[in-house]
Length: 514
Ligand code: NAP
Image (cartoon, rainbow, N blue to C red; front, side):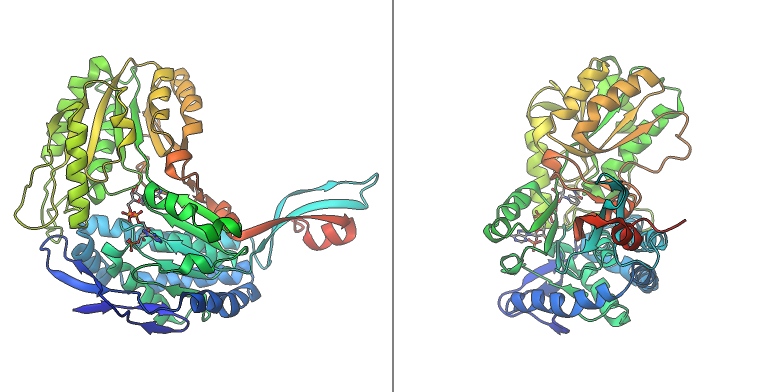
């Protein structure tokens, strides 16, 4: 069996001790084993700080951007092979594998292009300069400079490629070395990408390290210039956020956690409209893509009470057409869940939701003898205000219709019950309704996706995280923020206010002349 190794302090290590076994999500056959036991985590942190960081900070943003572009191309060259790894280990269909892998290379390429706007500088100018004294001689300017630390990235199992490289793109462009730790159940894809990154020789030694398996005591070695960016469940996020060393040394922490994303149908949307067609197709995509294992997947579907039967029937008809099966088959539209633990958790979650809802299609029962399969499952809540539907993230192809009055304020209040979301979507051609819903929902969402007849034809789905726009959400979603163009670098940079003689402050650190 393949033993997945870690890349630490300049060489590959195979862990000792009892390994975790990774399996094929379709056949349940063992594929690989993983252990990080025996790694010297203090040495990993030191290696990044002493080798990777200085080498990256020597470069300008433009030079680091050029590296990202080459990394993107190096990974893209292996696209077909990576798709096969994803299909086997994560149970993704070909389309779902591409979504993850192209998301990784696309985000690297996007950050390479953002770097072109910053050029040959080693710091970023933050806002306009400001006169502080009686005359302009005493001047102020905010700048952002790379922090001389290490960025530890603890990633979720559901996007082994994108999650690792979207974080790495921001940190490396900012000039900060990374230590990447993938979610163990699907680590094979991340490991293969790590091999490609290391073998490419593009990055300076120490700029990229990879821990496959447990994070050990890695977090206990972080200090005030380091950062931890985590993606995963809110339960693990809470645990990591309360790590004593991170608290004691004010280590920066960014948490991207789970989310009960909502889709809201406004009462004005007619059944014959493009917006209604987009509403249905978006729901089917967001429920079934990656077998619903997306942090941005729609879990709560708010529908005016008198339209519930219509929406349920339309959705059931579409979901029952979804071909569920071996993801290696090109006709398959939805593969298995990624692991036995996932299947167990999702089944239990469906049973809990069914305590307050009717199952319109699917359910928690088995649909194949082997593999971690579950049918797309739609429920209709008996009472939209029940806590259950706003508290329980069932991380699979599962969503619940929640009837509401059609009032924008009521919709916003129900969305808020989720305690903070990554993204919610609204479907309306009524400008006044949409404006009211946006203002009510925005404080509870990192992103709002506003569908109407005017954009239906061009819309990219709400579950697609775009590097130009921020990703993250308040409250339950972790309170973090990633991406959003150059905003994504902020976590890795120190903002410093410079106050002094304008000739120096503005001359050396002000905005470059046009
Ligand atoms: P998870 O169980 O919380 O694990 C996430 C990561 O944390 C994994 O790499 C895991 O490693 C690691 N981890 C667990 N315990 C740890 C500890 N004590 N110290 C250090 N690391 C630790 O989440 P998951 O099951 O992988 O992912 C699914 C969840 O992620 C869902 O709730 C989903 O909504 C959320 N998610 C959020 C986003 C977002 O951007 N907001 C994106 C994707 C997923 P092991 O695998 O080795 O245990």
